[in-house]
Image (cartoon, rainbow, N blue to C red; front, top):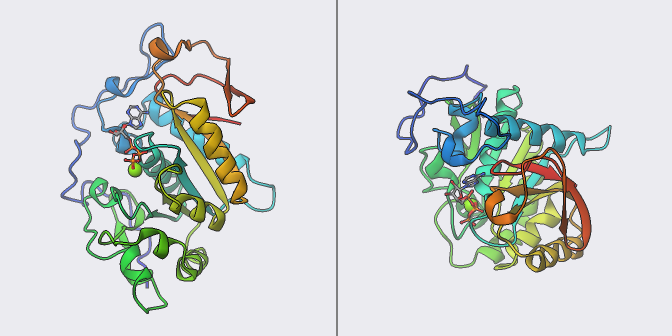
Length: 285
Ligand SMILES: Nc1ncnc2c1ncn2[C@@H]1O[C@H](COP(=O)(O)OP(=O)(O)OP(=O)(O)O)[C@@H](O)[C@H]1O
Ligand SMILES: [Mg+2]
């Protein structure tokens, strides 16, 4: 049996390796700029929506949540979402976690699943143990994964950690057990947010993309258009539903983008329009 939502905690999730909110300054209202870069936000990016709720970065994650929910058809909002990117380090985990937190703040029952089995991070962010998790379930025989899910009262989030790093992540991820597990979990949660591995270095993300309702492709400013194009093709070939591509952590000084309210950005040959992207996440359709 899963726990009911506890009221928002005040630090009960002890052991968190990230800084707390003590002394956190809102970065909102920075003079003369609509740009918020993470180095101006006092909370760690991964948990900024919890510890620095009024920052523009947090606001941007709330915008992202709205965009994703609005991207759904009228009758059905996407329940299971995969966060992936072309390469390592583009901001998949930070996006997945912050989006999960904003959804939980809106009183939704949210599960974060760490499916980056070879490079798991989610448990560390929430100060949880990963001794048992997705890999444990997938390599076992139990039909019920709920006992392996942990609840973080501080973030009002349910977390399914990755478990011990297995020798064969693609085999486990691609199994019928994985597909059935996600389908079973969908009965218990409003949203299931899956932190996945990058697309171009393993097959796992493509497989997961075909199991979920929607995919958010995270793109760091430095990633080449060629890599993004390849990722989009892989997702299309997997018959994945790309809900949006998110341009994350762009430095306008390097990218040549400016912080004016509108500009165009081209990915994979498609003209895509984004609003203010610098150092903050936004969704680009
Ligand atoms: N918008 C942002 N602004 C500044 N730093 C960011 C932003 N998003 C992510 N980061 C930082 O970039 C690094 C990589 O982010 P993250 O771990 O989320 O990427 P990832 O795609 O999950 O990486 P991996 O492929 O290794 O799992 C982290 O140190 C994170 O704090
Ligand atoms: Mg990650």
